[in-house]
Length: 276
Image (cartoon, rainbow, N blue to C red; front, side):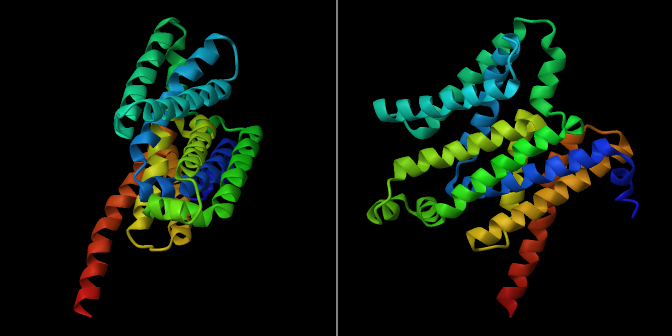
């Protein structure tokens, strides 16, 4: 009951919990694809690539989420162009844009001395300032990504394990890849307001990676990641409340700690199965 008390007494924490849980489930859906397909690097690049877009939007007096969308679109388009026009690997294309976009963001931030407070919000989020409108937007994004993942569950599964098999089955790996990147970008765009561009990456990767240690089916991995991400939000907010810590960072640290707690449990379970 003591763990629930902060949320019963504080409307800001209740809004933060609801917003964080919705973000956790959205991250669980796309994070599963990132873990299974090895897209962690591009997820990291996208989460940092929104920085110049958000900074530019704030300089122009526009909503930050518009800038985040523009930054993500530039990243995805740039990666596609480099891969089509050159023989460079996808990692090289992602690395080039990652460094370039991050540097551009720093340049834009340096243009205004008043950006220091805004930069903290961009990087680390402001989950305790979540509003019902933020929650509505996150719920809409969760519904959209969840619906797309359900409709394309078979081709996405083939893409994760064998792009060649996906092509033989009549699907276009390139189109599926772009759709998957768009889902990741949409989740980053919506979730950065909750946990920030730097910390959303942890919520995308850690719960899905932890769930993948134990689950085999994609649906089970997503469900486990959603539960683990929600638990990280609940535990992180409690840590933030009781020990006066940064809320977004506490959530991300909790999600990573859960992974390292699960590792010995995984080893113990595997050892028992070998002896049985």
